[in-house]
Image (cartoon, rainbow, N blue to C red; front, side, top):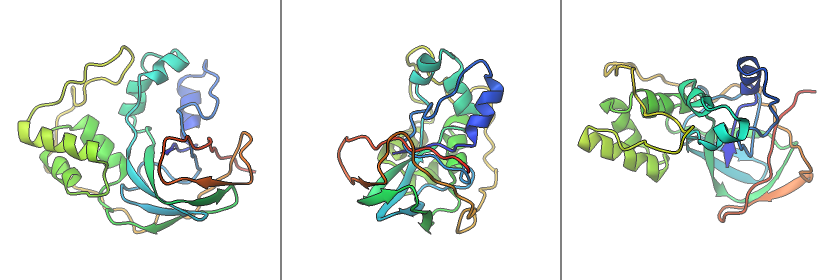
Length: 223
């Protein structure tokens, strides 16, 4: 399930004013005001209604964004500016609703914010400190941990050749800083998180734990 901060839309409307941005423009299932990539960590466990959802990894921008909005540079801009959003895994299935708060229950990896992981993965892809932290994080998705292990072992980047309009090779033109301090986030994010549903979403809906059934899109507005 993809979470994309609603605040980012203000930025994209300024950067690309000719584009008529419509939510969910980035394929998100869930969106809020009050949380962004610098305030959320991999492994964060949230309670939403009866369901428990856990942050599993940052989202890697897709070349499909370029095709959908006819903006060839958009996937790279999303990647470079750390405006990717993040994915959840469902730890406990349950009913969710617009008036149910999104509440942080546990934070196990305060040093692994989504923004830090995006910086290590794309900006400093061979930084050994970041690679070791990613490998040691059990909450991080297996694919990201395997990639970190491969980079640490080989010392080279995997092939990032992809479809036209996809993100560029990570790390180009940005020197690594092996002594860079790892930020520690507080145990809880800011409390001002606004969450509402849209687009025909019934008042309550069951969030499944497994399966490929797509969750209905969710976006946020302020009254």
